[in-house]
Length: 357
Image (cartoon, rainbow, N blue to C red):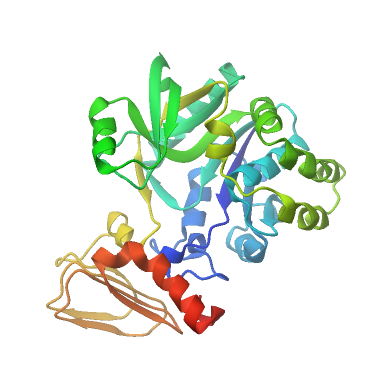
């Protein structure tokens, strides 16, 4: 059987002040009143039955996630006691799926992207699952054909073609300098690393046991408890603080013996910052991106304007700015400084404490 895992543990400091420690970005209703996590689950409709979809999130968010996703069985929403990066989230999901089906195929997705069109996404996922089952010794990742020399993403160097949209992976390259990224794009041999995967349970378990043996050893009691339908929360609370914090790319993918890349030939839009809303929300006639019920905008262009509730936001003579209102904090900044928002939030935490973060 085929299972899906959605990793939904990040807090998202670049979407402050709406995204907070207690309210993660993937639950914000920013796109037509729906959250990124809801959209991510909807994308899997028809590909994976709801009872075979797992959500790995932060324990603090688990109740909110269950409430937002009534179609997903509550026991399939699993909260990590603390973040230990993607390698351990995937190791945990591997154990939980193994407890139900040792011969499963497992697909791993992110919760902070808009991917469209949905029909093409479904075709690619179906083909990728078939490829993983045909190459059951390999780990498959999804690559995005780069459209510009992005320096904030990792790249996948692809090699020989094995089939339509399926290639061997030569190497993973971390966030490159602009000139190097330009070379990657011009060569036609590189993909953006999507952070999404598909593999047989046997393939990922073998790789995790080889490259992340301590985590797998410490999570083994979770597997036994899940098989017996016992509560795993106490076991996670004991094991998680001792796990090495490491990404799946560093821990496994860059070291694995055989990795294939499937081209995800879709629009792949990261909604991890306020300017990124422009890509998924239609702007007004002046190029303003507005996610708010009550606004008055005059002589203002190319702004991102976000608010919740019935608070009125009025802009006059402003251009290329970000204005975000929440009940207890308001952000106003230049669009060009949006990538520094994490730095600002860290300063707020240092100087004002955790109340506003």
